[in-house]
Length: 90
Length: 165
Image (cartoon, rainbow over all chains, first blue to last red; front, side, top):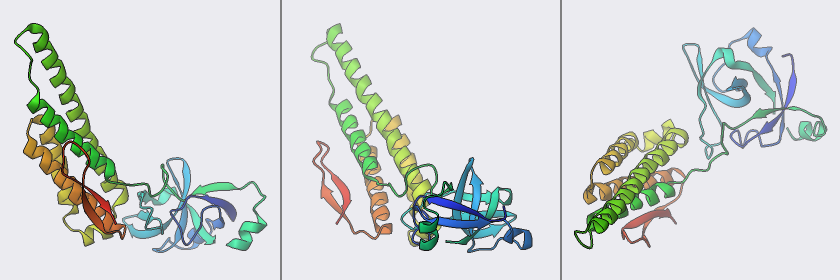
Protein backbone atom coordinates (compact mmCIF):
# COMPACT_ATOMS: atom_id res chain seq x y z
CA UNK A 1 0.00 0.00 0.00
CA UNK A 2 1.59 3.22 -1.17
CA UNK A 3 -0.47 5.53 0.95
CA UNK A 4 -3.89 5.05 2.46
CA UNK A 5 -6.14 6.95 4.83
CA UNK A 6 -7.93 5.17 7.64
CA UNK A 7 -10.48 6.18 10.24
CA UNK A 8 -9.66 5.10 13.79
CA UNK A 9 -12.22 3.32 15.96
CA UNK A 10 -11.32 2.82 19.61
CA UNK A 11 -9.44 4.45 22.45
CA UNK A 12 -6.38 2.28 22.93
CA UNK A 13 -3.99 4.72 21.21
CA UNK A 14 -5.13 7.79 23.12
CA UNK A 15 -3.86 10.41 23.75
CA UNK A 16 -1.65 9.98 20.65
CA UNK A 17 -4.48 9.05 18.29
CA UNK A 18 -8.02 9.82 19.29
CA UNK A 19 -11.12 7.78 18.53
CA UNK A 20 -12.59 8.92 15.20
CA UNK A 21 -9.44 10.59 13.89
CA UNK A 22 -7.94 10.00 10.45
CA UNK A 23 -4.45 8.60 9.93
CA UNK A 24 -2.23 8.04 6.90
CA UNK A 25 -0.55 4.68 6.51
CA UNK A 26 2.00 3.28 4.06
CA UNK A 27 3.87 0.01 3.63
CA UNK A 28 6.73 1.74 1.79
CA UNK A 29 8.82 2.52 4.91
CA UNK A 30 9.08 -1.19 5.68
CA UNK A 31 10.27 -1.95 2.12
CA UNK A 32 13.24 0.28 2.91
CA UNK A 33 13.95 -0.54 6.53
CA UNK A 34 12.93 -2.89 9.31
CA UNK A 35 10.22 -1.87 11.78
CA UNK A 36 11.59 -0.47 15.02
CA UNK A 37 10.44 -0.07 18.60
CA UNK A 38 8.22 3.00 18.96
CA UNK A 39 6.71 2.82 15.47
CA UNK A 40 2.93 3.04 15.29
CA UNK A 41 1.85 0.31 12.93
CA UNK A 42 -1.17 -1.08 11.11
CA UNK A 43 -1.48 -4.85 11.16
CA UNK A 44 -3.99 -7.55 10.45
CA UNK A 45 -5.14 -9.46 13.51
CA UNK A 46 -8.00 -11.96 13.46
CA UNK A 47 -9.13 -10.47 10.14
CA UNK A 48 -9.29 -6.97 11.62
CA UNK A 49 -7.00 -4.07 10.87
CA UNK A 50 -5.58 -2.81 14.15
CA UNK A 51 -3.18 -0.05 15.08
CA UNK A 52 -0.79 -0.22 18.01
CA UNK A 53 2.73 0.85 18.92
CA UNK A 54 5.72 -1.51 18.72
CA UNK A 55 6.96 -2.22 22.22
CA UNK A 56 9.53 -4.93 21.49
CA UNK A 57 10.91 -6.95 18.56
CA UNK A 58 12.38 -10.38 19.15
CA UNK A 59 13.09 -13.37 16.87
CA UNK A 60 11.06 -11.91 14.02
CA UNK A 61 8.04 -11.29 16.22
CA UNK A 62 6.64 -7.96 17.31
CA UNK A 63 5.11 -7.07 20.67
CA UNK A 64 2.45 -4.41 20.19
CA UNK A 65 0.68 -2.29 22.76
CA UNK A 66 -1.68 0.69 22.91
CA UNK A 67 -0.59 4.05 24.28
CA UNK A 68 -3.64 4.29 26.52
CA UNK A 69 -2.67 2.94 29.93
CA UNK A 70 -6.33 2.77 30.96
CA UNK A 71 -7.00 0.34 28.12
CA UNK A 72 -4.77 -2.60 28.57
CA UNK A 73 -6.58 -5.16 26.48
CA UNK A 74 -3.54 -6.77 24.92
CA UNK A 75 -2.96 -8.15 21.46
CA UNK A 76 0.51 -9.26 22.52
CA UNK A 77 2.99 -10.70 20.03
CA UNK A 78 2.28 -10.63 16.31
CA UNK A 79 4.19 -12.03 13.36
CA UNK A 80 5.94 -9.71 10.91
CA UNK A 81 3.71 -11.27 8.24
CA UNK A 82 0.75 -9.55 9.87
CA UNK A 83 2.33 -6.12 9.45
CA UNK A 84 0.56 -3.96 6.86
CA UNK A 85 2.27 -0.61 7.20
CA UNK A 86 3.56 2.27 9.27
CA UNK A 87 1.30 5.06 10.46
CA UNK A 88 2.89 8.17 9.00
CA UNK A 89 0.55 11.02 9.85
CA UNK A 90 -1.78 11.22 12.81
CA UNK B 1 -4.34 15.12 12.85
CA UNK B 2 -7.23 17.52 13.19
CA UNK B 3 -6.88 19.10 9.72
CA UNK B 4 -6.82 15.67 8.08
CA UNK B 5 -9.85 14.71 10.10
CA UNK B 6 -11.92 17.69 8.98
CA UNK B 7 -10.70 17.44 5.38
CA UNK B 8 -11.60 13.78 4.96
CA UNK B 9 -14.49 13.60 7.36
CA UNK B 10 -17.03 13.16 4.60
CA UNK B 11 -15.07 10.45 2.75
CA UNK B 12 -15.92 6.76 3.15
CA UNK B 13 -12.68 5.54 4.68
CA UNK B 14 -11.69 2.08 5.81
CA UNK B 15 -11.59 1.62 9.57
CA UNK B 16 -8.56 0.63 11.61
CA UNK B 17 -9.34 -0.54 15.11
CA UNK B 18 -7.53 0.81 18.15
CA UNK B 19 -8.98 -1.87 20.38
CA UNK B 20 -9.25 -5.63 20.45
CA UNK B 21 -12.44 -7.64 20.60
CA UNK B 22 -14.20 -5.92 23.47
CA UNK B 23 -14.96 -2.36 24.60
CA UNK B 24 -11.93 -0.75 26.24
CA UNK B 25 -11.07 -0.47 29.87
CA UNK B 26 -14.14 -2.05 31.48
CA UNK B 27 -12.62 -4.11 34.25
CA UNK B 28 -13.76 -4.39 37.86
CA UNK B 29 -13.01 -6.97 40.55
CA UNK B 30 -16.43 -6.42 42.15
CA UNK B 31 -18.17 -9.44 40.51
CA UNK B 32 -15.36 -11.72 41.71
CA UNK B 33 -15.94 -10.54 45.28
CA UNK B 34 -19.70 -11.10 45.03
CA UNK B 35 -19.03 -14.60 43.69
CA UNK B 36 -16.60 -15.30 46.56
CA UNK B 37 -19.24 -14.14 49.08
CA UNK B 38 -21.71 -16.49 47.39
CA UNK B 39 -19.28 -19.39 47.82
CA UNK B 40 -19.14 -18.58 51.55
CA UNK B 41 -22.92 -18.34 51.79
CA UNK B 42 -23.50 -21.64 49.99
CA UNK B 43 -20.90 -23.34 52.19
CA UNK B 44 -22.77 -22.00 55.24
CA UNK B 45 -26.11 -23.14 53.79
CA UNK B 46 -24.85 -26.67 53.19
CA UNK B 47 -23.58 -26.77 56.78
CA UNK B 48 -26.90 -25.54 58.15
CA UNK B 49 -29.10 -27.78 56.00
CA UNK B 50 -31.04 -30.44 57.86
CA UNK B 51 -34.09 -32.62 57.33
CA UNK B 52 -37.22 -31.82 59.33
CA UNK B 53 -37.68 -35.54 59.96
CA UNK B 54 -36.49 -39.00 58.85
CA UNK B 55 -39.39 -39.30 56.43
CA UNK B 56 -38.45 -39.97 52.84
CA UNK B 57 -40.18 -36.75 51.80
CA UNK B 58 -38.05 -34.64 54.16
CA UNK B 59 -34.91 -36.57 53.18
CA UNK B 60 -35.67 -35.79 49.53
CA UNK B 61 -36.14 -32.11 50.39
CA UNK B 62 -32.78 -32.07 52.17
CA UNK B 63 -31.01 -33.76 49.26
CA UNK B 64 -32.65 -31.36 46.85
CA UNK B 65 -31.60 -28.32 48.89
CA UNK B 66 -28.01 -29.52 49.24
CA UNK B 67 -27.85 -30.28 45.51
CA UNK B 68 -28.92 -26.71 44.75
CA UNK B 69 -26.48 -25.14 47.25
CA UNK B 70 -23.66 -27.27 45.86
CA UNK B 71 -24.48 -26.32 42.30
CA UNK B 72 -24.45 -22.61 43.14
CA UNK B 73 -21.21 -22.99 45.14
CA UNK B 74 -19.64 -24.76 42.18
CA UNK B 75 -20.81 -22.16 39.67
CA UNK B 76 -19.68 -19.18 41.74
CA UNK B 77 -16.26 -20.63 42.53
CA UNK B 78 -15.85 -21.05 38.78
CA UNK B 79 -17.06 -17.48 38.31
CA UNK B 80 -14.37 -16.25 40.72
CA UNK B 81 -11.77 -18.03 38.61
CA UNK B 82 -13.13 -16.61 35.37
CA UNK B 83 -13.41 -13.01 36.60
CA UNK B 84 -9.91 -13.04 38.08
CA UNK B 85 -8.45 -14.74 35.02
CA UNK B 86 -9.90 -12.13 32.65
CA UNK B 87 -8.58 -9.17 34.68
CA UNK B 88 -5.22 -10.86 35.16
CA UNK B 89 -4.87 -11.83 31.50
CA UNK B 90 -6.40 -8.81 29.78
CA UNK B 91 -5.88 -5.89 32.14
CA UNK B 92 -2.60 -6.36 33.99
CA UNK B 93 0.61 -5.40 32.20
CA UNK B 94 4.25 -6.25 32.92
CA UNK B 95 4.79 -2.88 34.65
CA UNK B 96 1.95 -3.70 37.06
CA UNK B 97 3.67 -6.99 37.91
CA UNK B 98 6.95 -5.16 38.50
CA UNK B 99 5.15 -2.90 40.96
CA UNK B 100 3.23 -5.77 42.57
CA UNK B 101 5.59 -8.75 42.24
CA UNK B 102 3.29 -11.11 44.17
CA UNK B 103 0.44 -10.69 41.68
CA UNK B 104 1.07 -13.91 39.74
CA UNK B 105 1.41 -15.93 42.94
CA UNK B 106 -1.78 -14.35 44.27
CA UNK B 107 -3.73 -15.32 41.13
CA UNK B 108 -2.29 -18.84 41.30
CA UNK B 109 -3.48 -19.12 44.91
CA UNK B 110 -6.95 -17.80 44.02
CA UNK B 111 -7.26 -20.52 41.37
CA UNK B 112 -6.18 -23.20 43.84
CA UNK B 113 -8.45 -22.00 46.66
CA UNK B 114 -11.43 -21.68 44.29
CA UNK B 115 -10.89 -25.30 43.25
CA UNK B 116 -10.60 -26.32 46.88
CA UNK B 117 -13.80 -24.42 47.68
CA UNK B 118 -15.53 -26.46 44.98
CA UNK B 119 -14.14 -29.79 46.13
CA UNK B 120 -14.86 -29.34 49.82
CA UNK B 121 -17.49 -27.98 52.17
CA UNK B 122 -14.96 -25.92 54.07
CA UNK B 123 -15.87 -22.51 55.43
CA UNK B 124 -12.25 -21.62 56.15
CA UNK B 125 -11.30 -22.31 52.52
CA UNK B 126 -14.21 -20.18 51.32
CA UNK B 127 -13.21 -17.30 53.62
CA UNK B 128 -9.60 -17.56 52.49
CA UNK B 129 -10.78 -17.40 48.89
CA UNK B 130 -12.60 -14.13 49.60
CA UNK B 131 -9.55 -12.73 51.39
CA UNK B 132 -7.31 -13.49 48.39
CA UNK B 133 -9.82 -11.99 45.95
CA UNK B 134 -9.91 -8.86 48.09
CA UNK B 135 -6.12 -8.61 48.03
CA UNK B 136 -6.36 -8.88 44.25
CA UNK B 137 -9.00 -6.12 44.20
CA UNK B 138 -6.75 -3.87 46.29
CA UNK B 139 -3.88 -4.31 43.83
CA UNK B 140 -6.23 -3.67 40.92
CA UNK B 141 -7.46 -0.35 42.31
CA UNK B 142 -3.94 0.76 43.19
CA UNK B 143 -2.89 0.24 39.56
CA UNK B 144 -5.78 2.51 38.62
CA UNK B 145 -4.45 5.20 40.95
CA UNK B 146 -7.37 4.71 43.35
CA UNK B 147 -7.13 4.21 47.09
CA UNK B 148 -8.79 0.91 47.98
CA UNK B 149 -10.82 0.64 51.18
CA UNK B 150 -12.55 -2.28 52.85
CA UNK B 151 -16.14 -1.68 53.86
CA UNK B 152 -18.57 -3.96 55.66
CA UNK B 153 -20.64 -5.99 53.22
CA UNK B 154 -24.42 -5.95 53.48
CA UNK B 155 -24.59 -9.69 52.79
CA UNK B 156 -25.60 -12.44 55.22
CA UNK B 157 -22.02 -13.65 55.01
CA UNK B 158 -20.83 -10.53 56.83
CA UNK B 159 -17.22 -9.81 55.93
CA UNK B 160 -16.12 -6.98 53.71
CA UNK B 161 -16.00 -5.67 50.17
CA UNK B 162 -13.09 -3.79 48.65
CA UNK B 163 -14.09 -0.59 46.93
CA UNK B 164 -12.13 2.61 46.30
CA UNK B 165 -12.37 6.08 47.83
